[in-house]
Image (cartoon, rainbow, N blue to C red; front, side, top):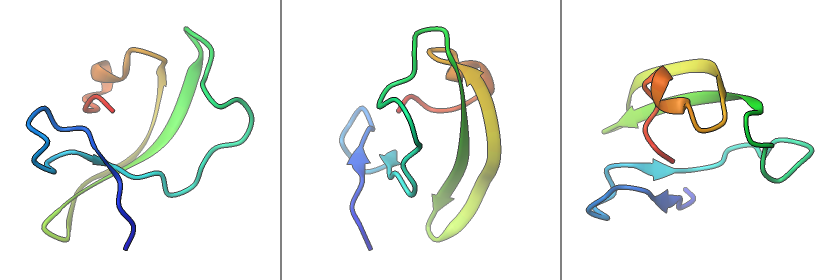
Length: 68
């Protein structure tokens, strides 16, 4: 198992970001660029959310994606 970055407000491990496969190209997308991510939410070894989402950088919250 590999560790991720704790993004939770309380640093309680409730939101952990793990990069499974790093994208190609630029390290950071351009402002107002469109990105596509494969999102997988897991809690207590059970998947509660799994989807591919496209959004404009900075507007992920419109797709109900937690910050991070």
